[in-house]
Image (tube, rainbow, N blue to C red; front, side, top):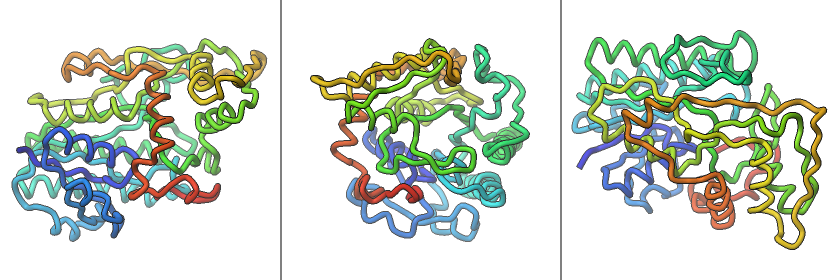
Length: 339
């Protein structure tokens, strides 16, 4: 049985990754900065350890041999926390260096790491297909600038350990991974806001009218969490050296399709929200990945259609499967940060 350590296991992605790998028969060790996971992972027969990746002394708490793979999803996010440049660099870049040094010391030679699509921002919102192996860059301004600098530096460190020590590395580039979390708020442009898609779901559930702005045919990547964890599983299973992989579906969802789907799933059947087209207003975001390398090398294909995503999202919203770890929606007032 392979042993996989999941760093950032109390976070949005890490929690689902840990649960999925456990279900697939791996020996999973969940690692988070939180001192207490409220017994969540023990209830799933998963060992939980509290480790701050910025403090290398904490790594003594981890196994010192017998680790086959590390899924490193720890680090600050500008979308979930107020913007602090030093915290981003410490948690992402220095944290990654500490994880790599730990791996070298315990003989583990495979790492899975999440990369921001902001390293390819010149390909966004202009009809371009985002390549997988083009030279990386970063936005000079905005709330994702230092975040992307820190991520790029972490990727460079991983590439060094690949070349110097023979690590296999699977760097996953992706936009928002859609999933239910009881906290519906995030930071955007340094301000705290209700997430747009959660606002649309709320309006649809109340039969309120919904505006579609700009060119309603512009489309973007929409990957669901229960497909994303399968990508991670494919990386754990792979015997390749790895590299950079774009995570997408091979298809995108237009703004019009997004809103019609939300109304279909979340609005009362006898009183659906009315759509108001506002073509004179700002166009929506658009993006599309080249996922040919991901599909070919990882033998991956998505299972969830867009409507399937929404239906499962609504089911989890009603059932709150992560309540023991994250709490429930009423625990998160408007000014509350993610746990």
